[in-house]
Image 1 (cartoon, rainbow, N blue to C red):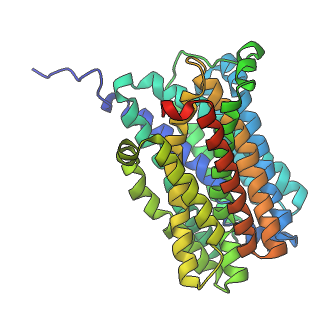
Image 2 (tube, rainbow, N blue to C red; image 1 turned 60 degrees about the vertical axis):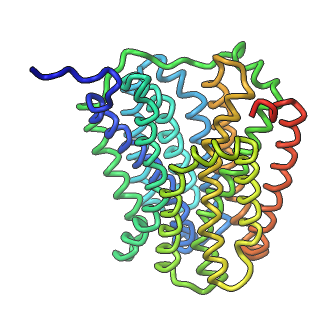
Length: 397
């Protein structure tokens, strides 16, 4: 007689989980190719690097708006339809980006891409928690979180593959068609959960807005994401313009440098258990700021080593950062606190800071730009950590 599967087993939901992971992968990859494409876009449109970097701001503005307002949409049409709409908006905007010939068109369609991409996370997370029993959540999210890490690795190679056809805009077209195909698959096979989204309301948001510890942790997220996305997006321009490497070599290094993170991240639970959250947080923030400060100086070999180490500290910050975020907010409001933090991080960390880094790199050279951004991150980290300790948060960590 066949034994029934355990209620905590993952296999019954495996197909749906893999489909959601695929959606997240295409979603994240579409946003990550913008960095390796920054230099070709500026050359193709005949604009400055700083002008092309405005696309970071447009992307983050659309993404932040959609993340914060996704609850209003999913509370009306449900999570299944919201994810389908996400894929359609993403695919359509990517196909339009592949054909745009002006800065205005670039910024408009990147904004729409950000809106489409931002609709996914709230509904994707809700779908996973609905189809997987609580005892399997950790394994499910471990699978789901492979998507952004793989996207960081593969984005430069997608751009490089498109460049072999002498048309880097093909990277947008490929991802656009992939998104539309996934939309059809999700309409057919996507999990149809009955739970709907929850719209944020003023009475629940006001106590969080008045919590200074929440803003201290949010500041840490903003600078961490800003240095991660900003340096990732400007490495090709830095290696080509300041170091004289070819675009192919620069993109190959960019993808290869992210492979190390895939092997280090699973060990972060062990590290934080041994060092504690406070020391682990200080290690990640200090390492990220220092490696960014020195990334552009010294011989090329040293710079490449530092640029390989720099993303390790950023990636390792997030498990600890979310644990600290849960400690500084009241129980029952963790979803809204994450929404506020992600919204601010998307707008400032993924948008303003990368655009500022590109502008400083074009004006001062990337060595000085990296130093300025790394120094700003260290100062912000020192202030935020001191504030958390003064509020007694450190004793709870």
